[in-house]
Length: 233
Figure: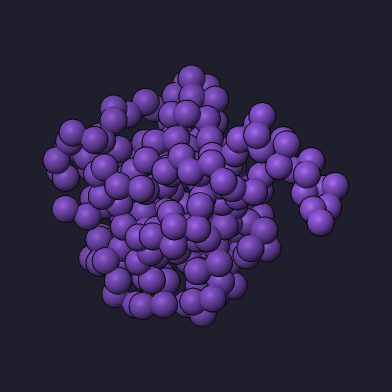
């Protein structure tokens, strides 16, 4: 016989269906964000375990990092683009926390990101963040934090000016657009720290590079980078 709890859950699902955030499949438990099929088909990179991976090569010769990892491959029209769009523009913060958790688990299991002290989300310009209502990198960092058991320092690094979107710019234009656009409020708090800098996606790496350069000017800091996705051509 069906339990009362099962009957109540079935009734609630009938009137308040819970949909997969990717494909829209509606036979999910309320705590699930993705159906088994979509979860199983996320384009995982497995970079966390491997030195000299694609994300690390993006920064080679440009930024002195200890390790870098991107959890997923990003392709236009595919599942990760859809999920990131919901996170950034549709207010679906739970997606960012969930995917951030997957990112954190890979980092933890890798054995390459040792003794992380703090997580720093790549900051948005304050006016842009107010307009959106949140910074997606903070949401992702909030998913990583309980896995690694280290704090998120949200406001210590900030953007000192507005920068145009990088989407349609070529690599030299991207660098010029963001050069010198980051500052740090209290450098003493980061001295000697092993830092994980977090963003949603890396393409040319210009924005992360600019922010990372500012962080590495602080004495005795080590820099690691983690993103949900890496763009592929």
